[in-house]
Image 1: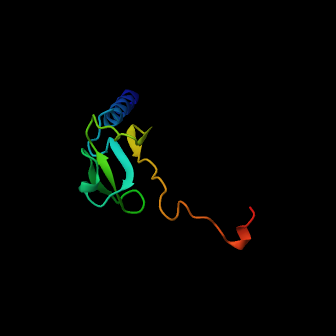
Image 2 (image 1 turned 90 degrees about the vertical axis):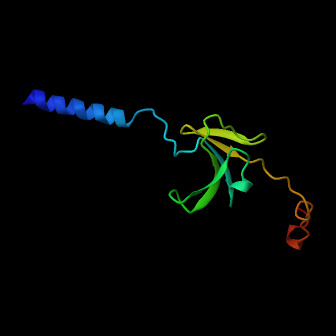
Image 3 (image 1 turned 180 degrees about the vertical axis):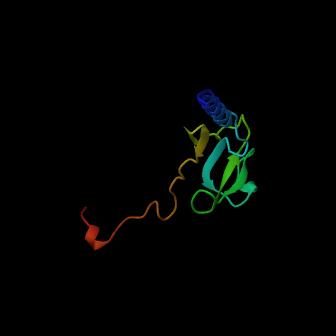
Length: 110
């Protein structure tokens, strides 16, 4: 009886280990650009606009499942949980807001 219980435990552990193997899940993006998109035309070459409704509010991001995909030039790269995330470069301020001077009396003389 004890031998049979040990045998079942070993078989269960083996089945669990086989289910948690290092195989790659093709449904997970290898590279994700951290910027929303409305269509694949807005994404760099090799990326597609993919909707995500499972993790928080619905959003769509440019993603690539290509194994050799990398972040576009000038994008910041970070690796989390085996995935690559690309942060677009910060936009350069221009126009009226960039040269705005605060003339409110409460802020005068600061």
